[in-house]
Image 1 (cartoon, one colour):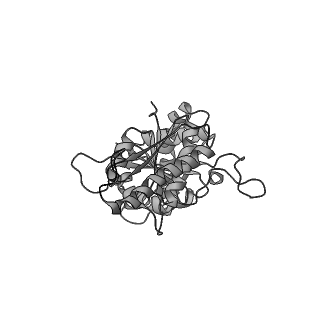
Image 2 (cartoon, rainbow, N blue to C red; image 1 turned 45 degrees about the horizontal axis):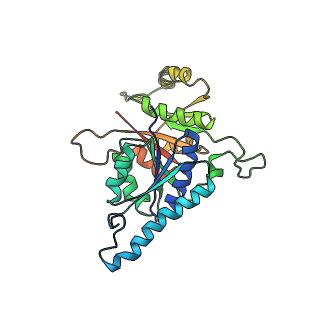
Image 3 (cartoon, rainbow, N blue to C red; image 1 turned 90 degrees about the vertical axis):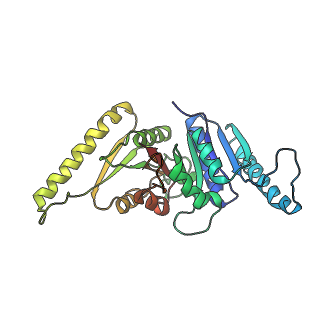
Length: 300
């Protein structure tokens, strides 16, 4: 069952502005309202003046971030139901709480290098690593045209079909939640799903000859085909194509996701009492280096 809302976190950065616009388009595709939130623990209660005069300027700025974004999105997407709320608590806990009741949470991402705001830096990464719901990270400068293929002359367009959705798949573990998210995203866009799977030759003593390598690849192809068969039946309207390559998963997925409109990657949920981010090296690399929006989907 779909959750009732798409949530976008704002912090005034260019990254969070791009994320809010992406979230608005995604909410329209899914037929859901959009909830814009801005969190700052220094905000006073409704109707109460700031306790210290020196807090007035940052409080005014915090309120302006939310109101300005809401006004811009209402003007751009008048058919979308948009609600806004100022959260009076630290950004990290606020975003995790918002994610629990959302179909997905959308945040800005700095990618590799650069400077961003709270939600585009360490807070965004911590939220991705701990959230119980999918989190989508969007780079600064991502536009509506980037969701679509270029036109026949190679120019950006919003009137062409949507770009593929790509999903990085590991057939060795649970992946139902990751595939379900990716297929729904492709279905909502009327776009193909590009399944990317990196395989490797199992460790053996001695050199692996060409025949053994071919057998290992054929085995990987059969496993992937069998895994996808019931999903192809369930989402018969989505064209699914497979890309298998031998090598390190992160490097291969970065290359294979080129030209995609959205990349979906899984992340194991934290076990109770576990410490650390548990984001995983593959997901971490993809978030930093892939240019398109990246959806990180927690799974068991």
